[in-house]
Image 1 (tube, one colour):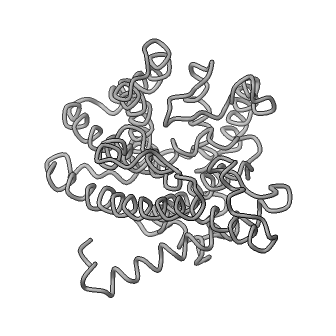
Image 2 (image 1 turned 90 degrees about the horizontal axis):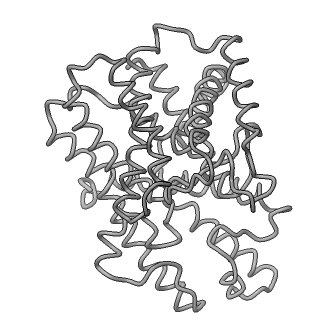
Length: 360
């Protein structure tokens, strides 16, 4: 992978995590593409872009690497947020999460990842682990199929996930299956893009841009963000397989959102490539994902302190609530991105220079 393409992927990761944080603050950079209409699919797409065929013959190494890069840090963060949640409970009388148990610590992360509210965005980490391991084994079984044949198989899988989620009760295990089916399609799409499209076809032409805009305009007919009681429309909640009344719209709006993200990087790359902070964001997406709700909580606590408001007031609202969003949304966003990015960079520095934690 050449340096330019590697840099573009890093900027793409930075864009994806920025959209996640802005989505939790309920504002959008691209008005035509609502929060959570494609961001998580974009992360799966990026994972597919980075998958290497050499692991097809080295399962043990792949699993070991994914455990080390995804699960070890996940459970370190879980232990940290268990302690933080207990401390907040002692200070404010509010326990932000499920009851403490071995099941909720070790099993729940692989079912829904919402054992602690402050770290609930990390549900994506365990889902990514499951998806990538499943993808490896599927690719081993399909290795002799043509790329187009595999694309058909994964497409059927992705599109079938939504109607299946409506046909059967969403037990925890079935919910996991639905999420995995949906995400596998986008992992393969990313892999297909790298192998068959990138460098071979120019998909960022004015004509294709016009097609994507027209398609997204049609999809907006199904959007209900302006009236939440009718459903969330183009946005969807993958962790709970909440697609509302939609059947194919979530897949289509994910595809258009991914294409627009790739297009945005192509257009802006020369302006963004030398901005060190954007590079840092892309390199610390895990830490931003893990910590941004906690940082928002701390910002709210600081604002309460300044304004003489008791912290117990925070207990009356859900974990995504922020103080006076009309005036403070962008302050929360800027502070959260800066603090979580440099937290990740700082932790990496410590890992690199402290022998005790070097192998974690």
